[in-house]
Structure formats: C-alpha cells, structure tokens
Length: 92
Image (tube, rainbow, N blue to C red):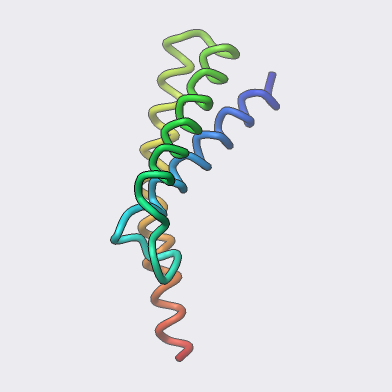
C-alpha cells in the first residue's frame, strides 16, 4: 500500500513539474516548455495521481493528501528555481 501511495505522489509531482515548466516565469530551464502539451501532460499526470490516491485511500483522506501535496509542490518549485538561478548567477 505504501508503494502505491508513493506512486500517486510521484505522479502528482511529475504533473506539478510539467505545469510549472510550462510557465513563462519558471526558473529551472532557460526557456519554458511548450505550454499546451506540457499543461495537458501535467493535467493527465495529476488526474492519474488523484485516481491512484483515491484507489488506495478513502476518498476524504486521498483527496486531502493529494491537495496538500499539490500545495507543497507548487510552493516549493518556484523557491527551488530561485535558488538554482541564484546559484547560477553567483557562479558566473
């Protein structure tokens, strides 16, 4: 069961990363990914992650964990991008 929950969280992380990398303000890469395909892939990955979470956990618990995981990812990714760009700027 723990491995399946981890799969759901991993799918959600991949979906969040795909949506983040499609943003014009992302700081992980020099240029953002093409918006439509990346956002579509992100939405599919997020939906798959939610389905996995709802299969393993009860609906209230699965949706609670899923939504809180998304909040963590969407807050953490911009900070990681800022940290990366700050380190890249200081090494030049």
